[in-house]
Each structure stands twice: as structure tokens, then as C-alpha cells.
Length: 438
Image (cartoon, rainbow, N blue to C red; front, top):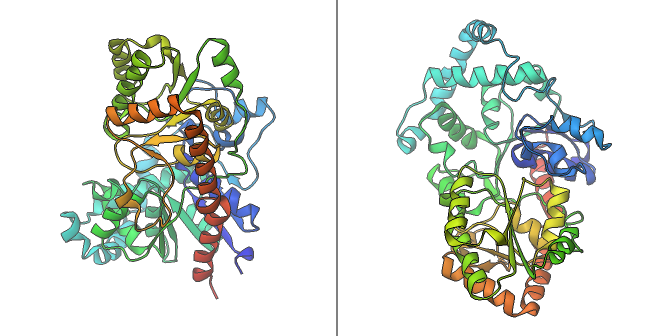
């Protein structure tokens, strides 16, 4: 029944919209992806083009990908120009257009203010006319790159909106839509800003909210949502597979005998980066002087991490790499004895399931309690939160090769059984069938 549906995936933080559309198309669903994000990690090329390591300071990814023979598929809706800094925008023209839309936006505000009702007590603020104006300005800016969104949305039977894109469905005509949460329910709905108030309302009005981060169940309950269900992050385990890594041979040639890969951004408060660094320093100084830690050069606290590594005295045991496009990251996973994820919030995004799909053991903070509502079978990650616990897990893997191999096999099996692409597609198409117009 869903094969004849046309579904637009609007928004592309971390390539989730692109990935879901790609996997749904594999199953026969006509799915398109509106890819509006400018960050390199949210470009389709980052996921599928055979790129080397790149940075934000290089040429646009579509241009780099074209040089190696990869281009975006026709079902990807792309901005009409590359303009990550908004240099082509006319702010005067934007203001004039917004002023001409004031009567329509005022009517939208009156409608939404009535629907906002019970959220006032939850959020402690009221919806404001300026909130709708700011959302209208954001919509107008998107339309300058993609064309009119209203007619675009009407070409599809359903829209599945990512990030703060569910707000766009509030501004248009009333129609069912789905919202895809990927960390965006953790704090954004409670911000005292236009997107916080409107995103909260959009989650309320969505016909279905897919939650991919189990810990945000607390936010869903705080918002008194009734329309949510858990959906794993889209991971294609036919692409993320076990195998030999080219980087491994390079590291071994340099004399390293144990390799840990940590691709997450440097954010001490959210990722617990400092705990991981202290644990690895302990491993180097006490057990494995030739162990190697591969770190990604991104995050707001990159310099802080560099300073701590120098203070702890294991700079020679660190290799810094730029953020790796996914085909290169797969090779890094395969080259690792262990993948180190995050050590604070107690759940995972894409890194842990990608690494498990590649058959590698994962050490991370994992809070079983926050997963009980959505994961009847918990993933076999190696749970550690403090520097002492992280060190203990690393020491165990160093001392027992068989333990690492077993953890890798179990992780791969768990992905195939509980997190595979077919499960993700099946769950989405079931939701679409419920909403399919008669």
C-alpha cells in the first residue's frame, strides 16, 4: 500500500533525511530528500562519495565529489546555489517580503496561539507574534534556495520533517506530517525562543513523532506527547560491514600494537572527552606504550583536548585526522581494536551502531534504565563512564584478544537483529500506511 506514496524527507541534519529516503527507495517507496544543511557532515556526499578527508574550508562537497565521479541522485532536492554563509541574500528584500506577508502570518499566529494552550504551563512562556514572524523569515530564506515550499509539499502525500523543519508544517495548510527527532527534543523545545515554542507545538501536532534518542523520553513526557514511538537511527549494515582496514596496516608499520578510534566531536560536557583521554593516558603509561588513539579534529573544545593530552604526556600516541567521510570512517572502524564513543549522556547516536555493524567492540556510557522503554534486547556495548571504568575496559581488551573479537561479533549480530535497515524501513512504512489518504 505504501509503494505508491510520495514522501518528502525535509531537513538533513547528520544525513538522516537522505539516509531514510535512500533506504525507503530500496524498498520501493518513492521518497525524496530536501537537503538544506550546509555543514559538511550533513551533505549526501559525506555519506556516499569516495572522498578523502575534507574540511569546511575546501570547495563545496558536490564539486569535490564530481571530481571523483559521484553526483547526487535525482531524488535529492538541492539548493539552487552554494551559499553556506548567506552571502547572496538581500536582507532588504527579505524584510519587504516578510512585511507583505504580515496579514497572513497574523492569521497563522491567531490559529497557533489557540492551539498552544496547554503548552503555556509546561514551557512557562506564551507564543508571540514575533515567533511566527521569525519562522516566516526562516521559511522565506529556505524558499530562496528551493522555491515555494507550499506547492512543493503538496506534490507529496506525506512530509517527514527533521530537526526544526516540523515548524514549516505549522505555517502552511493543515495536513498530516511526521516529525523525526534526532537529539532535537533534548533541549530545543524548552528554549525560550521562537523555535523552542513552535517546535514544541509541532511535536504536539505531528501525526507521528519518531524518537531516535531513547533518553529524550523524559522530554516527550514533559511535553505530554502521545504520538511518539522509538525508531533506530538509519544504519545500512550492508555498507557498514566487518573487514580489513587499510589504516591498520599503516599503524602497525609505525609500530603501534593496539588501536582505539574515537570519532566523536570534542565536547567535554556532552561527550565526556576528557574522561576518555585520561583513561587512554593511563593505558599508555601502565600497560601499552605503543597503543594509538585516533582522534577527529572537530568540536568546540579541540584545543582543550590538545592541552590535556600534552599535560598527560601521551602526544606521541595520538593521531589527529580531519572529520572522515563515511567511506573513510568505515575503514577507520575496521582498523580499530576498539571504538570509543561518548561518556556522559548514556545513549548513542550513529557512531556506536556504525562501529558495531563493522564488527568492532564499543566502549561508551550506556544507561540501561533509559533504554528499557524501547529496547527489549540491549546492545552489547561495553559500559563505562568514569576514567577508571574506561581504563578497565581498555585494559581488558588489551589483555584478552578473544574478548574483543567476541564483543565485535555480538555487536554485529545485535545490529542485524534489532537495528538493521529493513527494520527501520518497515517501521516507517507502517506509520505511512496509517496516515495514507483514502
